[in-house]
Image (cartoon, rainbow, N blue to C red; front, side, top):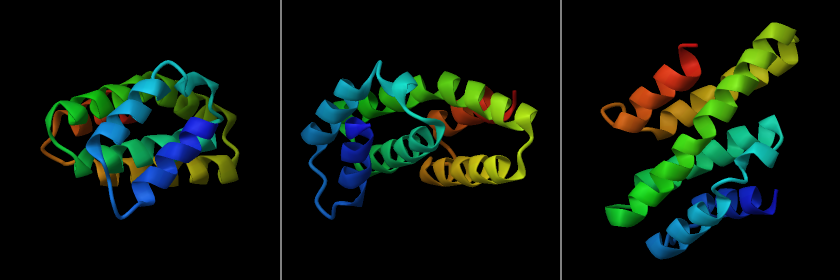
Length: 120
């Protein structure tokens, strides 16, 4: 949860240091599955925002972290829709739209997001 808060806070920062972003994204890898679904949605959105704000090898490290969230998101989305609780479905849809809005439409990350999370 602390890493989620760090990433969300970093995404809101007016000064983004690519090396710091890459280090935090690398530290977060492998820990995404421990996040609650709502936190995972926020985390993924923030990682997408950070990825869009940097270039170079650091961007790839952040993109790898984002890609790691996709299977977990897909599983949680499927579970949410199976449960069918309107409030949870609404939160899920809102979170997915926010994530999608951070991804460049022409980028491979957007295509992967649609293929791995939205389409199933």
